View 1 (cartoon, one colour):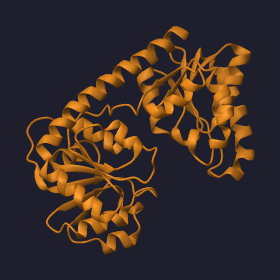
View 2 (spheres, rainbow, N blue to C red; view 1 turned 90 degrees about the horizontal axis):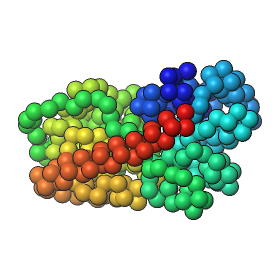
View 3 (cartoon, rainbow, N blue to C red; view 1 turned 90 degrees about the vertical axis):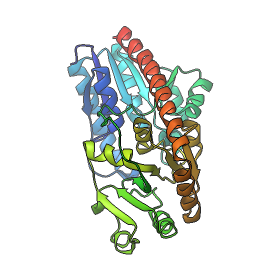
Length: 326
């Protein structure tokens, strides 16, 4: 058990957000997960096993406070009922899909019941915090933690004709629209960062000559690509996704071109060009970012400083609350 008496828990084989929070809280992280399937039909099989395994873990570790990720909502309910018996307090980190997604949205009354009994609730967007406020449940807004990785410093030669797209070839990324946009910009090089093995072969084979697949980059190689580009491009079809890749632009002060969603508009209030997930709109947005790069970069640098300070203050409030409870 950690010296602070805090344990972080997630019902998944890996979850980056929880791992980052656990590291910053000085908490001992535990992933409880059975079966590889992520389908509702598997829930009756694995959730009872994970419930029992969680209670055994908590009984062994005897934490004072548990930071639990509320995805699935059963995980939060499990920790809450354990707390009823032992007096253990818990912090509930609720992801937007758990509140509004079709898979778990129907459990919102259950989530309300659990949230009102949490020491505090954590969510990554202000608009979702309103759910908790309407339930009279305490809430703190904390986006994904800023990257701990150090970014290369010093002057860099920016290539005004290079755009970096950061993604993972996930189902919510409009890659075909991106490739069509590249065809409309023959004088602009678009570097697509990400593990090419996850891309459809047809995307790679049909890509125009001005598209470069770099593969998955780490460390200085990754940050250098962002710093040298005229702008960073991030696209998603998920209205509730904050896009960690877009947040990386805050760390480098890079102009940003992102999908026009309520979530991204609410967070990136300057230094950003918003586009529809259509080839013509993406191409036009890239042109705008290149032409306005100097002003956008300055705005993004200021915004990055502001958002980092806001996050620091909110996290300090969470950490202090948990340490007092522990």
